[in-house]
Image (cartoon, rainbow, N blue to C red; front, side, top):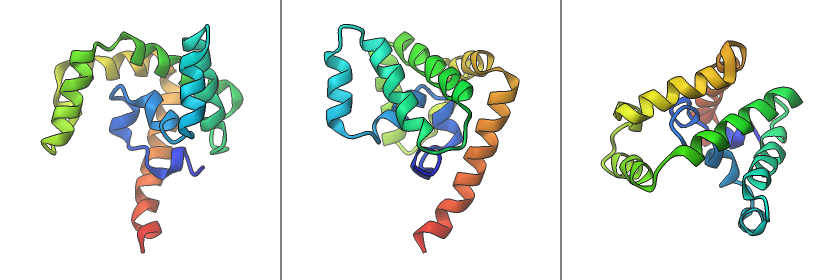
Length: 136
């Protein structure tokens, strides 16, 4: 999995979909199993860790930090906020223009810490540069 299937854009890392950018690429059965767990949050973190680790771009500690922060951030989002993000995407606008997304980005960066934030930005930029080449 080329850093989350090379589909992870910087904005998605910091826009709430951090967790689901990786987890939605897992097969649906794994995601369904996580939601059937008696510890859904823990199961989602573990699923994120399994999927993210496949990219071999982050250390085990970085994967753990990334997934814990991402699940926590997603868990704090309301349905209304998720709808706003989807509406922005449907309108072909960047969700990063939404005030609550900007605040969440700051919170995620704080949770990730400066080293992981920098590494994620670098990996995202590399994935975006590689994406056009992969389409050819």
